[in-house]
Image (cartoon, rainbow, N blue to C red):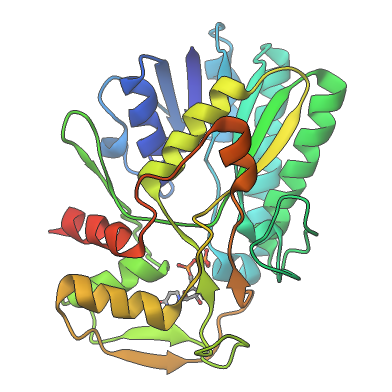
Length: 320
Ligand code: UDP
């Protein structure tokens, strides 16, 4: 297939781009490099430095079979401070992309949605049919896109899959030996921040709140290996057909608290990694754990590296 990957210079997009190139697809990456890196685009993919507003210029070439849409802002805390950026970028940018896809007859889209669409769940693990009540503008903007995709699919015959990522971590090694890892200029995610302390960057890691209604008081998340997550995109793309919009959760079904993550990072790195409790971060739900039963049943997805120790070890190895 000929595919456009928006945000393919970012952490997850670049791993999916690499796997698609390896599988023999014709890959074009579109990225404005606001958070991505041009050198993360895999060899074998063409790179277009442009924003979502200009995606139509690339799609106008014709012949595109689908879009994998990663380009977005993805920080919960930032979204609370700057909701305008999240609504304009995540919803406004996506609507421009969807319009360009209609104009240029691109039949399918695989969209990066998020566990943040659910908000504070009534039960865990979360299933796709559970209520969506996002607790921050990031989750709300992604949910709005999911809602638009359902309508576009029904009215315009767009084939769409939304993949709701839980907490993505780890690093991926391509068939050519190239290592793809998380490298944000401003890092807010837990595992890379903890590993940065082990590398000597900063004296301690902040634990944002220890008074949540969880066994140790810290937030619980479901961590998934970026390589496993990426493989789900290839399955979703193959299954993306007809005027259907399907939503799939992607996680491992096991939750780890912030303290548990830090403890696994201590084991893996052999570093004491001091932790200091700080106030809660705005917008954080207490517990997010996925049921991925639907994608396992429908598409046969199965994680190869579901263990937190493996996920952290891969992230750590990629840093050294
Ligand atoms: N967290 C933390 N210290 C950090 C970074 C994150 O305590 O330096 C917490 C955060 O409040 C949340 C969990 O770790 O409860 C996971 O946060 P992350 O930003 O990695 O992912 P999110 O769940 O927001 O997508």
